[in-house]
Amino acid sequence: DNGATGRTGLHRRAGPDRFEVGYWIHVGHIGRCYAAEVTEALPDVASSVDVIESVGIRHKRRGRRSTTVARKFDFEQVTTGRGVLLAPAHTEAAWEWGTDRQTWWTRRVGG
Image 1 (tube, rainbow, N blue to C red):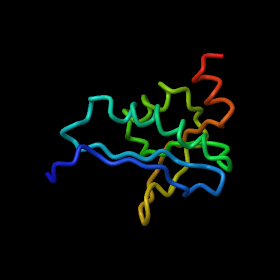
Image 2: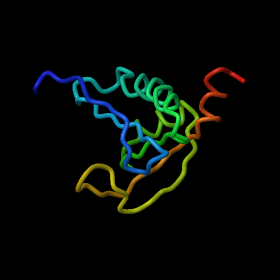
Image 3: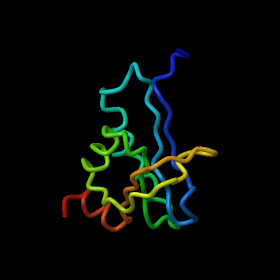
């Protein structure tokens, strides 16, 4: 254990107008809502970048907690691809979720 709680970021793997929310939570910190907090905050940041039209999440199919997080914030399931790039040099069957800028802000402000 290196003392890390986890890591997060916005990634441009899916194209110039789309960010992906990325997170890794250390096993000792799972279940403390860190992934949910990141998933709530980072699309706000992404949507503030003029060229970004959508935000997504990709995760391993066996990542049921990540499915729960995506659904909590009303991301739409986009694909159920096989061999989807999850990280550099790492492919695995994955779920992919997304939302566009307009939908995200409409849901965030309750309208």
